[in-house]
Image (cartoon, rainbow, N blue to C red):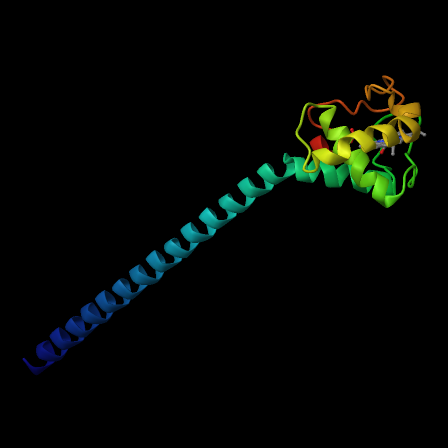
Length: 154
Ligand code: HEC
């Protein structure tokens, strides 16, 4: 009789312990799910922002400026090879970038630089990329493309 009572106590204890443990596990899991969900949402927002960014005119202008100031050795597949840095000085580079974005029909951040940028472009860039910016197929890249090759690659 006494032994049975002890047995019942043990079973009761084990059941209660099991139930408490299970409910604890459940709350931790749902917390984890919640965190994962939040993370996912955050990541999603971030990558969307990046994609919008890379297609913005600001990004394009800074890409062009960077190529003028630092050159381009991206191996874009043109027979001429790399483009050296410094075909124009830094101040001219900004203005040229404003002009170059208009070649693909975009509205530059500083429209007031376009006219001067055009003049600089003709004397500093036109020799290779062509006065119309269309380049020479296979030798110099076309700057009138909707998305420039270096950006497309990114
Ligand atoms: C001597 C010839 C030459 C001159 C001058 C020159 N470029 Fe280039 N440019 C190239 C070549 C070749 C490439 C491709 C380089 C590579 O593969 O990374 C290039 C690449 C570029 C790119 C990247 C194109 C893309 O599709 O991503 C831009 C933008 C550019 N040039 C703008 C200019 C501007 C603006 C000027 C004038 C300041 C200029 N270039 C002057 C030869 C030239």
